[in-house]
Amino acid sequence: MGDADIALRHIARRRPEDLARAFAPEGRSVEVLGWIDTQVTKIERRMDKALRLRIDGEPRVLHVEFCFALRDDVPDQVFEYLGFLFAALRIEAPREPVPPIESVAVVLSGRRRRLPATGARRTSWPERRFSGARFRIDAVYQRTVAELRARGSVLWLAFAPLARDATVESMRAIVAEIHARAATGEERAELYTVFLVLASIDPWGHNLQKELVTMVEDMEEGLLRRTPIIGEMIIEAEQKAEQRGQLQGHLQGREEAIAELLGRLFARRVGRRPTTEEERSILDRARALGPGEVEDALLDLEGDALVRWLAEPARRS
Image (tube, rainbow, N blue to C red):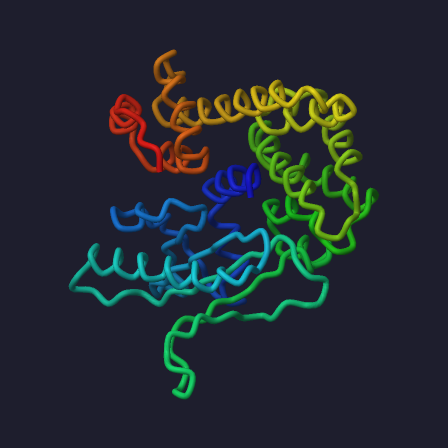
């Protein structure tokens, strides 16, 4: 999903409670204990992650996987990740029962006809009773703006451009609400990053991205031009007529935006800006492994381990 991968992975890491409350049973108490990151789950460095929860005091695990569309291989991916996750939880606490696991595929685009509420990956013989894995499907793009707002979290406001009834007027209200409810300027920038990146998916053909970029930029008075990914989107929109013949410059600008975003994540984890060598290593690894893989490492590794990892030769996956 390109930029959506980076933006969604980052905002999900920052707001796990909002994910948990959207998918937990209504009327139940929810306590988020943290992300599950073990040596086994690190084998699967994708955006999908699992949260350790307590629902009414009982242990639970929530696995959320964001999908650009409900492709035929999504059930396979969910089943595969559940295998890694189950094995990780058993290794982590071999004398304890593995907590119940709920998987949710959050779908960002696809057909207009309503998607089913559940999906499945059958592993049993077709003539036998079902055996395998079932998962919930949250076709977020098929929801209305009101439904997303009713989830009660500023996180889900950032998904509003995907709504089937999104309009310039309703998005103006969403932009103002994000501005009012975000705790800091950094949080607003992160939420607006998701908001505009998801607007570029445009599953219903609303064609609102240009208006939304201008709307957010006017609200924040230049903040987004200094924000990786969004600054790139603004520049790209302004220069769209000149894109032909400028492919190399566009790719270079994209690389610089990715390097800046990953450099900021490094600074947050280590407490300082990366050195010139470390910046070069971050960019080399983003080219070789993909920016999502590098961001996972920046989020997962502690300071000294992260510095050592960057000092190792990059290996192409």
